[in-house]
Length: 82
Image (tube, rainbow, N blue to C red; front, side, top):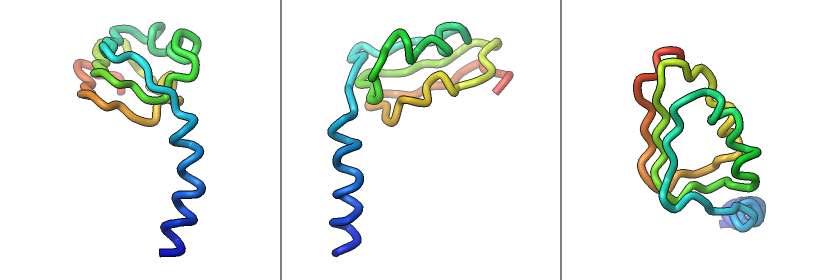
């Protein structure tokens, strides 16, 4: 029980600081949009809608490193370079 309380004390501030965004979701079809995600949506760490990532030229998902949760559907399609 003590461990659970300690875990909650460390995790709770992170969860409270998380900012929800994009209730209608987002489709990312090229690497430039993915790379610019952090500057286009600063503070967006929880995506409320669906996230669809698709395109043969997408090679790196690190542009989404600030995202900790997707509450909708997460699809990664036609990304042969990953």
